[in-house]
Length: 181
Image 1 (cartoon, rainbow, N blue to C red):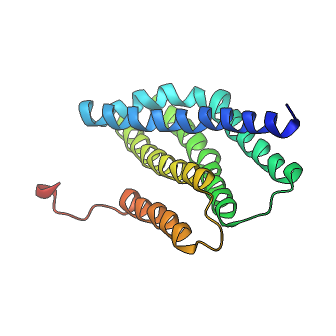
Image 2 (cartoon, one colour):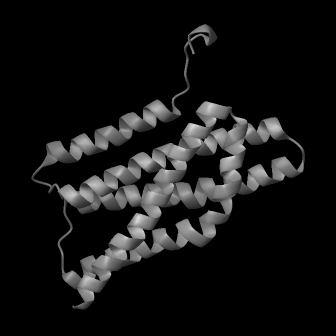
């Protein structure tokens, strides 16, 4: 067993913790909100907020550091899959650190102030970001497994298109009349 094998194990294990945990929470949130309404988003948020600093942040950073270490120590060339995957990791980390962490704190402050409706709205916004993170993570996993090169632009474009369409479906407001929604 060599250092690269250990790094691969650390990379895969931490990615499972990060991606699996995030995907499980996104699915749980979707199920609870569908069953119980917007207030359920607050319940998921209460569970998720303490997980951010003790689970998701360490797992995401360990995944990133071990992955970059594999490239540097393994002498691997930068290719299409790794470039797009790294860009998506950047997006996911930016959402986690820039949206989810402060958003969770905002929800806590709103709840403490008794502004439940505003807290519910903020929680629903975070759930949209969580769904988008799950799509990005699935795309990262696909890139890691399929490893399309710059010589395979159709595969790279297809994965990027799935992420872009998901973003549009998740973040573009529904403009249908209320009777149709």
